[in-house]
Image 1 (cartoon, one colour):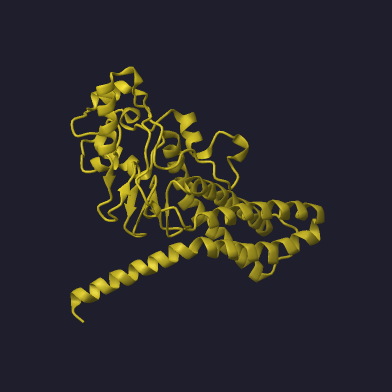
Image 2 (image 1 turned 120 degrees about the vertical axis):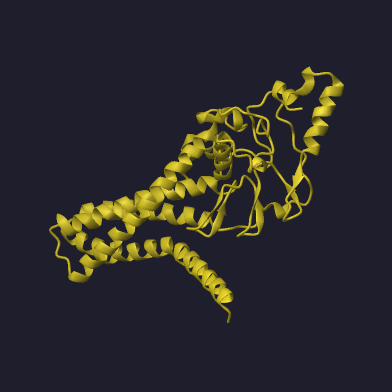
Length: 316
């Protein structure tokens, strides 16, 4: 085997190993910490504090259930790729052109239809905010990014579940770390050497989770309140610094070669204000916000925009 082929093979195997480790990390952490919590911590804690241990167990089971359910909702399911589109959807313009004369109104509607593009890889209709993932080999509606922790794309169909998964996972890591640390330092229960080692390992796992997920959750909360995807965030940041290589990131709005403005809210046609941006993903019913039910508004093809009829005329 030649040196070049050997290097290529090593890179491929290294990438496969990295993908394997990151994909199994969260399930391994959950399973191992569950074993330690129930098998060691709860058994010992219930002997010394019967009533309190029952409360701790109920809280623990609720938190881990939310983590597992949201993790399962991130797993791919049929119907989330644009490959499932059999025909071009008839998009409705968000603007009312009735105030214009019939010729100009018709021109704007035709221009809207002609602006629809196809994915150069899939060869099928690519709605606004949809993008192609080279790892999944599919286009996804409101594509955000390909997540290495779940080896799956985060997009329109699961973005809410992705945010809630991170939230509950952080809550879980803090909860188990606190209880295991309490058992090591302040508990009056008798722990064996194996139990103490298991607590330390779980605390170490939890620290890794917190260091990785807390910044990621904070970043996505910023995107959530701006109504931006990761792809759009990168494109706007580059655009502000006069890098025009990602002009294709937006099919709609004021994002073009000539525009020299640096106002994020102006450049992002989907920014409706932080309250409405939040409701676009989590819905209008507050009691469903933290539950594993679909509440994201819209169909993933057509999005409410902050562009007026006057803006459409300016973009002609």
